[in-house]
Image 1 (cartoon, helix red, strand yellow):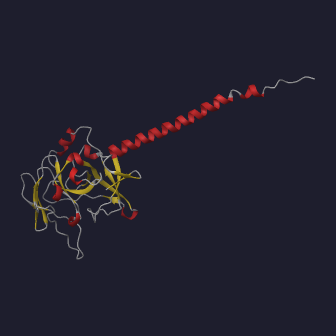
Image 2 (cartoon, one colour):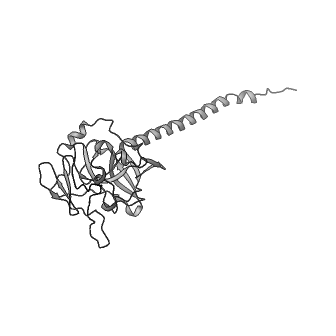
Image 3 (cartoon, helix red, strand yellow):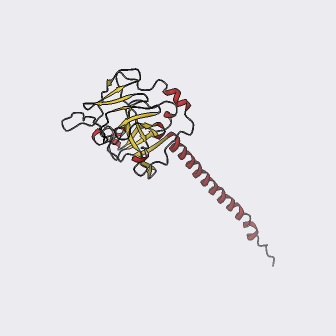
Length: 250
C-alpha cells in the first residue's frame, strides 16, 4: 500500500508570517491616521480656529450663555483687530477666574481716549474730536431703552487713554460686565482671537457682526504694518481655557 506524503503542515507554515505582517501593517496605518488626525486638530485648534462655549452673560443679548462660538485665530495675524470686533482674551492676572477667558467687544483702539458721559460712550481718536458712538447692540431695559454705560470701578473712573498695543473692551450687557471699566485697557498679547461664528443653538446660527461707527476709523492707520511685525510665536491661548469635551468655556 502506497501512502501520499502529508504536506498539510508544510503548506500552511508560510501563511503565519504573512498574516502577522498584514496585522502589523493595519496597526501601523491606524497609528499613522490617529497621529495625522491629532496633528491636524492641534494645528487648527492652536493656529486657525477654536470652538468656545460661552458661560458668561456679559455679552447679552448679542451672545447668550450656553451658546457656542468659533474663534478666528488666523486673520488677526495679518490684519489688526478693529473697533467693534468681539474678542476672546485672557483677563489680567488679578481678574482671572480659573483660567477661563473673557469675551467682550473692542471699543477703544490704541491712542483713543474713551469717556463716559451721562451713560453714553464718547471716543476721541488721535488727532480727532470726541464722537458719541451709537451702540444698538447694548442690552435694553424692560421699556426697550438702551441701558446706560456707567463707571464700574471703586473710583468711578470715567475716562481712559488707551496705550499703544492695547484695547479698551466692554461687554454688551453693560450693567453686569466686568471689563476695561474695571481693569483698564487690555494688552494685545492677552487676546486669543475674534469671535467669528455662532454655530449653536441651531436657531441662532450666524456670523458675529461688527458694527460701523460713524465718524471714527475702525482700525489704527498702522494696524496692518503692526501685524506684520508680530512674531510667529503670537500666543494662541489653547491652554488658557477650561476644556469641556474639546470645547473651551467662556
